[in-house]
Length: 281
Length: 265
Image (cartoon, rainbow over all chains, first blue to last red; front, side):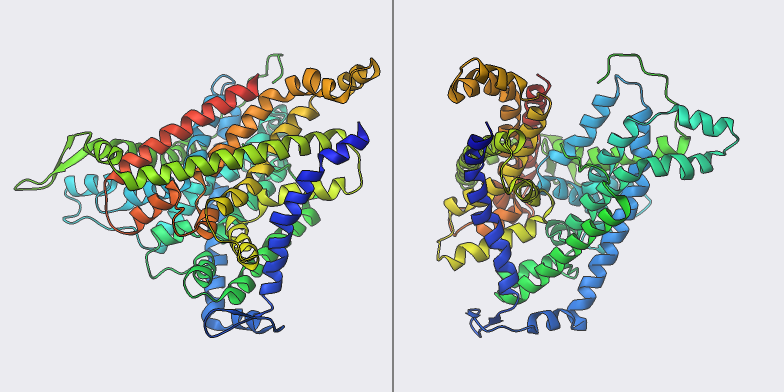
């Protein structure tokens, strides 16, 4: 079987080299090239694109994106942990339903989900309908086109990515540990920080990876919920490719994204050992 | 799932319940809102706007030829990408799970890359690569881009299934004189069939839903349905969006249900 198996892997290997390795290698190469005045590529090596990324104009976008991504990750964890715990302690026959409900938006078309958030927060949405009908406000409060809307969108879209890996760990947890801790006099908060949190750690780390990196590179949510004023890393990169046509600079910014991704994986390896298995549908 | 009865689990603190209700509301209410708005038509009267039940958005949607065209593109791309990803992916999964050849570990890592790499990077990397070769962007570049990330999911799902069965059945058959082709047809394929179906279904759904990679690799005349949806949202209020979104929610839900049924087999 062994020899034959190598042959079976050949198409896969060729495909991945041609459509994955080569493209990514050329992102690196392009980031070291120059852009001509008509958007064409000039094949001379330069670090200018990286230096330009450190220009305060662009660097503040990077910092803002990092801050928003961190906030999103923390919020996802703050909601995801209790949520995963509640599902894990629910009666066994209810768990599949609860998980399916969690997965439904997770696998619904992404644009539809973002649009749905825009509808909820917008002037025509149900929140405003209630506010206006109750007489609390006279005109609808438009909550879209703001960083707030972006944060809500990020949270709503990435919460399942944090919750599922934590749930996978907690579902298998030995719950008698909690009784033991309580019998030994641990208060609820101590049980949480000394028992539940450490046990959930592999799930938390998988979840953090699944949330942090994609959120940092998010394009759609800032674009549809942030309005014209909100520029985040994902939009900046996309603009370089599809509007400004400065591919080398866009490639350098994309390399920053790849570096953050590699760094978070290295960090997970470093503190978590094996860490949690990446969990996906 | 273990068969044995499980000890009763502790009840969570009331805060956990509150968070849970809030989280489900955040996840599900927006989708419910879209569904309900798709059946409502505003009636502009003398006073405030009132709403009435109506199928007008669905009616307009079904008569929108631009959308029908992008739907055809999406279906073509998703079918071809699924076909490519399933063939290469199933062969690859068998090789990775059962074989032992030089470079196997590296290949395992490579197949994971599309699962963790931001879609944006996958999209722009493909754009750079295709334009470097002077390829004109169109349906074929969409298929190549989609098949690459769909592969990762097919392989993960099929490998998980293969890992649950050790290779002893296949070895036994081979020892008894079955040719590799017969072993595959009579043993391996029946074992992995549900996973292949689930993987293909997943590949199709992901390709059909993809926006960002298409955004980068689509040509002038090869907009997909999600791209069309995006430009409808981006450029002006158009209530057909509610109807289209609702249809997509239903289709995806159906796809997921089928995919899960297949994997339970």
